[in-house]
Length: 194
Image 1: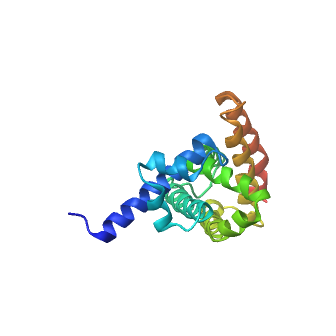
Image 2 (image 1 turned 135 degrees about the vertical axis):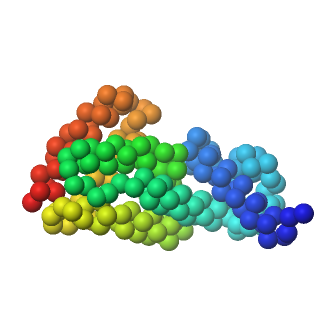
Image 3 (image 1 turned 180 degrees about the vertical axis):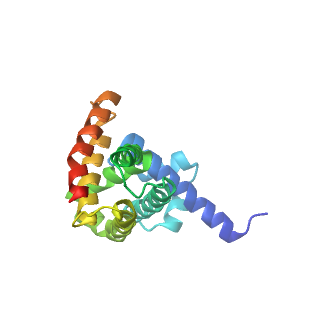
């Protein structure tokens, strides 16, 4: 028989998984507490026992997404970039990570937070953690290169990768993505050689 703590953790995990999946599949506006509870197979009472509001649940979902992305980023074993071929491999892997359900969920929340100050404030700690995870990986990626500011370079690369990842389901083919990755590698490689 499960303990109360185990049941609580299971309920929270179900709610977070349901919120993440709903944000990815349905978007922010359609990710209501009712939709989340229906997907999780739980009552709204169960949701509100663990989270005081929809925003609190979405902030917890963002924290979970940051955690999952950190695990995926570390598991991808991306660095260091010591050759142009390694750079291509890293960029392709970053596009793959950027196209994940978790990253699409992250973008959905960030876009909603742009015009929702309370959500933006609630997402602050998760945003800080997400950026800490990404920037911690920058040193490992570009440690063998002489780039003047590897963290700034990673920010530029991530911005391009995020743009590609957002466009994948809408307008970009696999060939478009490959061409963009090749072009990005062409632009970044000389910077790594400075």
